Length: 257
Image (cartoon, rainbow, N blue to C red; front, side):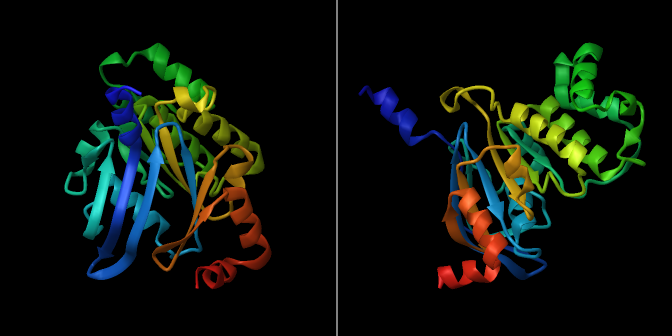
């Protein structure tokens, strides 16, 4: 094996989190979190409400509200723990928020153009809007009057425009009815390049879920359980979900003990 191939194998983690501890307003939320995601992989994280799932995603994205008290966040070999969100976005991180804000005075079309950048044109914007079934929403203010499903589709449409290497998805199925969740799954699969063999994918994803419904539409081989700010379980996400459904998160705590 050539030296360049060895280097590629050692450095192909898209995201590596080491001993990450996080506080908000002086209160510790996350404790010694460790995980790594390679290019082409999709990982899923389960956890009860208030377990710290959203805190983890917002910390990876660089929201200033979340203070890293220990550990590192390494994106494609670069420690980004001290970088602001805009620099992390330029390095290839994108996020779909669970509860994105309404932005009055800004059209969805204009935000799409900003996400695409210099290559933006009406055809590409319209093509993405058609995929998300949001063609009639492009000239509306961002998220204003949108339903839960429309907001989720709009968030994913924006991520498709941004084309990030690492997509952070916070409960993409939350507030989405059964008609729309299949489309949400299609958009996520396109975003994560699921049509290609894993060896040919450039993108990676970390999906936060409370219900696990997204696993019916998006395949993942690695799952975690986050409880009380700590990762207490790692394994097959479908097996983890079945355990949670039948025995609850308390079984995960007992297993960890």
